[in-house]
Length: 474
Image (cartoon, rainbow, N blue to C red):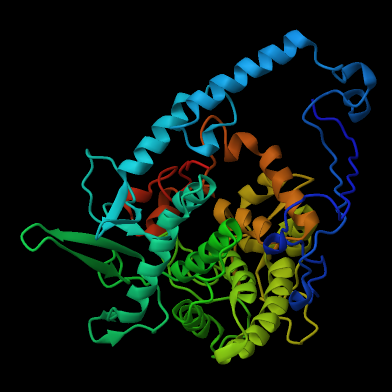
């Protein structure tokens, strides 16, 4: 079914292609001056080796397949369809207006999304994490920063940016004014909340917002990813609306600088990646991701690129821009060289020598080849590759994590070749990663003795459930 063809597409600079500086392609060798990203569209040459149809491109472009000038009867049909579309589109989200009869599932999804809205003093400020009334809510009735992100994108695409703006401002206020204390220890000033809830007092007719920075969370882990999601969403809001006034506010500029101060602070680290505890991101339970998880590194890279565009040079912003440029160079090189795994690299690791003492060592992390799990050799196809879950001294977590690899593609942390290979891997291992369900959040699942040791016998993360290989909608 899959033919090998080459598609060469040249896009002239005069075309109406939207500026994609946020996701601009980085160079393959990691040496890229991020301060010189152009704003103007450039000619793009895309080379794909596969087609979704058995017909060749030349057949698709042949004159016999090009429709002739529509007849008057055809034009009447189009006019009738347009009239039906206009009449049904008044109460339909714009994302659902691609056809005259949108799928009922889209309308149901928008209805559920609007029922999940949380209001603070009459204004929507986010969506709760879950609407299921049959389950114990715990903190699922709160607005999570990471969980609201896909909802925010839906509202932006539907022309409803005010909800996103209110969310960004309220979470920013919580960052600035809420006391972040766990027992006797105070968290960093730039930490963004994991979630918040709104309490309504019917007697006084007043609303109160209560934030959770990890002091109430299961496991008491601060959300490292919340600040990154906030910066990325601010950039998405700016790109979608063209409104730079929000990002230019002194409070927003200060909020970004506080987040970056935490991430770019100098310490004992010898790597440009961020050292994190277990449960610090979307995988918010013990799953053995402590160290340098791919999800955090990909979000870190994307947030740095967004902050690089949003920060103003005034008020100390210039110094942060310079530090961002240096970190992006180091981070992209590190991730593309040490986290990347394909068939060739797997063979190299299998033949690693150990106990190398030199700055010219090949096995820089002293990974023992016997630690490579057997499933990797069966899982890795001849074509394809991915960013592994974690790299630290004497440890490589070879598990596949969906979110980290997808964010790596979107942010251009992955080179064009690596991006293609990630998609090739998903295609080659479709039955393992997708099958009849939505995409698995991780692969393979931990089970047996390994599950007991790594998760601490977590009943929510049994094999093929939740974060442990569970299927999530994409």
